Image 1: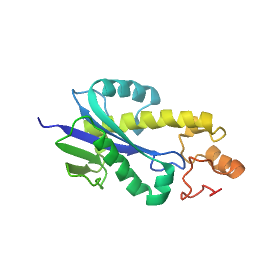
Image 2: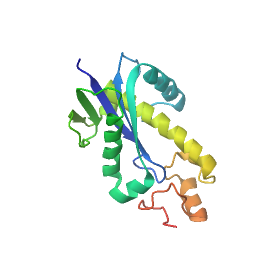
Image 3: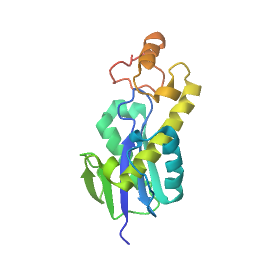
Image 4: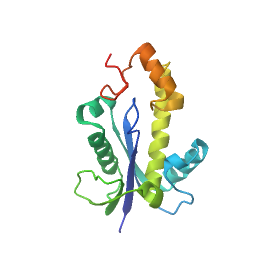
Length: 182
């Protein structure tokens, strides 16, 4: 059986939290799949439920500490590698969003803009985004004051001001511009 997986990551440009990747093998066609950034949170959530019910999937996370250690590109590739390895079945081909591919002994094809053109990559983008957004909402409860429930770790005006006012917290990426090392 020829199985195509798609993989994508979310959270590369964030100042806080992990980078999260997902890998998805769709069992059936799901309508209206597109890049997660092009969808409202409500539609994204609805599609995520359909994807999880109609696919094989795996997640891969890389912590902010590891991001600081190996850089965001390598962390993104590691997250995708982990997501692919966490699939319950091995794909024949993996379609990767972007120009770089994780280091695995599986046939892969990098596709620029793949999260907008390939359903399996779009599906991975959607479930990774929903997973990471939910995680950042939980982090706001643990580390209040940074507005993680709204900014999801991105460098909004409020988030940057909170960093100036309170310094960084344990989930901040210390090597990223704007994040104090304290």
